[in-house]
Length: 513
Image (tube, rainbow, N blue to C red):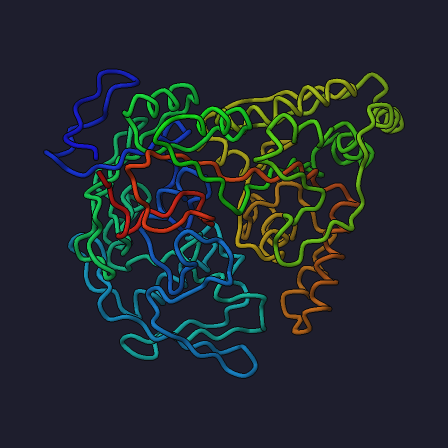
């Protein structure tokens, strides 16, 4: 059990004056600072993981799981749906309190929150909610959602993940722009303090409707250096840390005494997105050359076979709708050079990439850079701080974008967010379509409202095949979520998976002697 943390005295000393004899869980994160803490805009792994402990949804996937089969009530107590699947009525708990001095959460808050999530001016995930025709409060604690057409999983959009995180109307309106750095939710832990480039502190929510947490506070420290973070864990300075995502880390950490290691699903999908509007990537032969120059098997070996799954399709293996029956591009440096020559680049070509300085992601792109160089493709990496990376790639400034993402495990989510034209970056409805891909729009759109599961699977397979034929992107692999913690920490549940990419820290989590 952590007690009475001291003061900052450089990189490895304990952080902050936190309060006497508090049960403080100290977490080490692999980024240099916080990004956007508004849950309807937060897309980075570090931010989503933190918000995971602060917000609720109408429903949730049971803590420690990532499979939609484990969806259960959260703020909603129960729900009904019409025979045609277009009308959903949710009954809400009446004992959910917003953090701090804000009021009890009711149907008006839920309506406000979901409408905000569906508005491109106030959400990065608005495209996910395009099928929602109306959201209304039909009672003090009842919300009715009307769909314009059936979709693969409405409940999947209502878990506390991305736009499904429920915010409190009074807090959003009261804080204004400050909400993005002082988020207010209803979850077991609430925002307390932020020191840039050092830490965020969360306090236990004594009014949490499932019961007050047994941990008093969470200290979320920004430690971008893998070696520094590992050393802090080994010395007992931090209780929990995110892994560097490679085989050697797993082997080293699993050998430490008194340590729990978790390899959680879903994996983050590592994909190279190719911006078709920027020469020379507007020539499909150049995109094909890049695909042939990348040796996926070598990259999997580089990351580690126990923590990495190879990917050939834009939809991850294990997700509903995935198919591996897509055009593939065998590793061939000779063929890559031939394609470049055919495209008018016999002496090679230069491609630019804006990329995060986050060490785990940067190591992947540097490995790809070395492979491309063998084929005469000079990948120039402009490395910037993680939040700047997210900002700039959404301004459509990068020719090649390397992106890691975990999403709700249904094909529609990946296909819509990364490959439908409505999601093209730097547009009013832009999300994460960095390639400007639009070849699969019809199949993606039709699949959303298809009620025949077999036909829906066929449409999703068609979309994946079209995307790979056009070489909108080059899927690399899935990286499993790697976390470790001191075994004096009892999470309260088994950590098999997490959509939000951080272990389940709930009211059940506690330190044990």
